Every structure is written in C-alpha cells, then in structure tokens.
Length: 573
Image 1 (cartoon, rainbow, N blue to C red):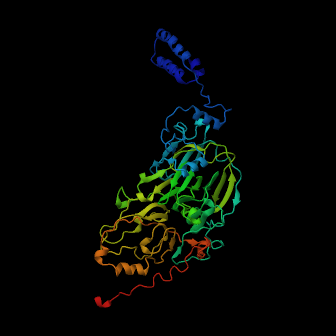
Image 2 (image 1 turned 45 degrees about the horizontal axis):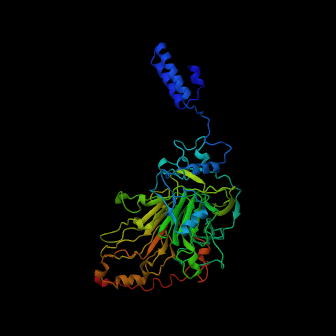
Image 3 (image 1 turned 90 degrees about the vertical axis):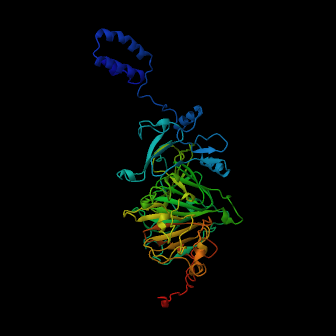
C-alpha cells in the first residue's frame, strides 16, 4: 500500500482511491474486510484516467498565437463570463479580438458598441476569452492559453492596502519585447519649470491671464497626432522628484495606428472640448466625447484616435480635435470625501465607467512613444501588438466619466457655497485637504438662493486656478468654448465691472430672486492646485490671429475693471 501511494500520480480517481485506502486503515478494519474491498478499489484505479501533474495545456511546439486561435476556432458559443467589451451593432460579437484599424473603422462607421463596467476605486477583473484569467493566484507556473503574467504597480509595494494600486495582466507576449529607446524631439512638452530652462518664462507672473482657443497650426495637408499636438501651458514641480503637475492644451487631426503612448511621469486627466476621442488602452477601449473626461494612469499604454469628419464645417480648423489635459506627477485622482453632505451626491462612484478587456493578436510592429522625465522617447516592439492583453484583474485601470451625471449640491437659502462642492476628482498632497489638483466643474444646475449676488463673487485664493470652457459663454463675459484663464495665487479675480453693474444696478431684487433653471448653454471646469504655477515661453506669446504660436490675450485686463461705480455713501449711516 505504501509503495503504491508513493508511485501513483495523485490526481482524479486515483487520489480518491488512495484516500479510501488510507481511510480504511484509519478505521482499523480487519484484514479480512480490507482484502474483500481491495479488488474493487484496484478496479476503480485501473479504469480511472491517470493525469500526470506535469501535463502541459499546450505543447511547447505550438506557437502561443496558434493556441489562442485554436481556442477561438473550437469555441461553440457563449458570451464572456463577466464582460463582453466590444460588439458590432446588429452583428455577432468580435469575441473581443480586434485590430486597432478595425476598431477605428467600426467606430467611424457607427457600428461599434463599447461596453464598460460601472464603479470606481475597487478591484475588478475582465477577460476577453472565458477562462483566460488564472484562478486563485497571480502568476501560475503556466498561465491559461500560454499567456504571460505581467504586473503594473501604480503605488509602492508597501503603500497601505486601502491606497495600494496595481493590476495584473495576461499578455500574448511580455512588454519587454522591444528595441532600445531613442530620443524624440518634443519642443512643446515642458516639465522642467526651473528658471534655467529657456522654454519657461524667467519669472512668475501674478496677473490674471487668458488664452484664445487653439487654431490650425500645420501646413496645408500636414497631419498631427495626439502626442505631437501637446502644448504645455504652465506647471510646477519636477517629474524626477515625482512632485508637482502641469497643464496642457492639445490639438491634433490624425489617429494613432500601430503607435502607442506611455507616460511614466504621471496620471493624465483628459478633457475633450472639440470632437470625440476614441482611446484604446492596454486594458480596453473607451469613447470620450465632449462633456466627458478620461483618466489614464501612469505607465499604461494608450492610443488616441479622432474622426476628422465628425461635425465638420467649412474651415480646416474644424478637422481638429482639441481640449485640455492635467498631468499630476504625484498622487492619483480619487473621488473626494463628502463630509457632512453624507453618503450621496456629487460624482457617484457607479457613474464612473471602467474599460473592459479586448485584445489584438496580430504579430505587427508597434511604435512606442514613451514620456519619461519630461521628454519623449521612441522604440519599436518585436513584432507584437501593445494591445495583446487578453485578461486582467486589479484596481489600476483607465476610466471615463460623464460630466452631465454630476449631482450638484448648492445653496437653497442665501449666498454662494464654496466651489469645492463641485469637485469631481481630487489628487491629494501629503497635507490632508490640500490638493495637488482638484478637478472642479461648474455644472448644469438650478440657481435659487435669495437676496444674493449670483455671478461668481470677487475672490483671492491661496490656490492656483486654471479655468477652461468646454462650451458656451460664462455669464456673458466673452469667455467662450476653447478659451482658458488663469488666476494666480492671491491675485484678485471676478466678473467684469459691466457684468457687476448689470446685475446690481440693472436688475431689480424681485427679478434677481427668481429661480433660474439650468440653461445647458455653458459648461466650464477648473484645475485648482496648491502649487504656484510657472508659464512656458510658448504660453506667453501674444495671439496674432493667424497661428497657434500665440494664444495669449495681451489686452485682456485693459478695460475689464474700469467701469465700477463708486456707490459708497457715508450719509446712509
């Protein structure tokens, strides 16, 4: 018995047989009883399949891509056990395998549905092929379908569990299969804000500044891709110290095919202003139209595509996608605490939509754009797609959010509440309550507070404020879609004097106190930070009305606050 137990492959029915034999021994059955049971146990052992513990799911001679293809060819039906990420309208699902070119063509043709999972700040999992996600462990000796296990960590290993961010992915080939990185010219990307950098203004500027919307900059017929259309406007800190942030404007008119970008310097919060973006990431795809935002974390590959004919007008400018980006070198974006507001309101976690697994298995060469230390580098993959992640699990995954779903809280009695009540996401510094960056919107909402000045009040703030306009004209201030405005630390700012005079002197109290429903005509946002921002040399060039080489309104403040009335009357005391 002992000899048999030592040599049998312990698996299936054989394991059961040995356990029964051991159990009989433990019961101290008589030799006569045990001998009567032994022929049946032996028969069970002979008829049961014996599987060695060293059997491989696929022969080493079968290429990994072939193993995946064989699985797809023999699949008899059924959907993804937890999420189907991509589907063609009116047709059979792609089974979540799709090339970037196919993805783009289906999207432009209006035949693509992208599915998401709801929720934020929680662990989740997604698999493009049922059974491709290992169960019970992260890095088994052999992953299902011959995949490679790879982990991306968004925080240090020893970060407390409630803040720890990481995702395990299961890829056709590991990410190390690439060439060496070579420098790539990127004169408009600036992350070094020291005075010695010639691309940064030599001194801080305490004035309120305003920039016009971006215009067409390229020569006739020239194409710009997402990473080529980035322009740093201002920022603070240092990527090498992982401390600080920067703000960009983007404008581009060409899609990234067989190219991907990875930002090793920080997280990106993307705010489209003109045209819908299709963003493919390693973990899945998302569609990001205006009035939505997308967050792509540090170290995750992505490609950005645009349909240049979407809503196109007569001007060449209309073929460009444009918008705003905030990059944080430290911390990560999260939903703010609600405090006395309670458990509900503002940005609801279930309204954040996380990508789901889809992959590209074709052996093709990809151009890798890598942002590292404030500079761009390029490399090439070794005949494999960047987007070969078949399954993943974790809590470090790109997501999007629809700004129109924000549940606004506001005063229903008198006076403004602080704009912090409109915070969608926050990235906290080491000082509690002080943000590296707060992302705030001024949402569609009712205005009902009484006997109060309803436009934004005059203000000085210990935080830096960058305001962007997604669409509309805020309080008739000629602040239109695509414009940007900066309020430095402790610099007074507020509505122009003519707006004040119109509201205070040109409107009766009864008219002012009427409840006002949302007009849905304008939507603005704000990046607010504890850092003192410094401007790039490009941002300080005056708008000449012809190109993107200058967007700054030099005369912005000339007549803005010149018509205030001196209403002080000491005789009223």
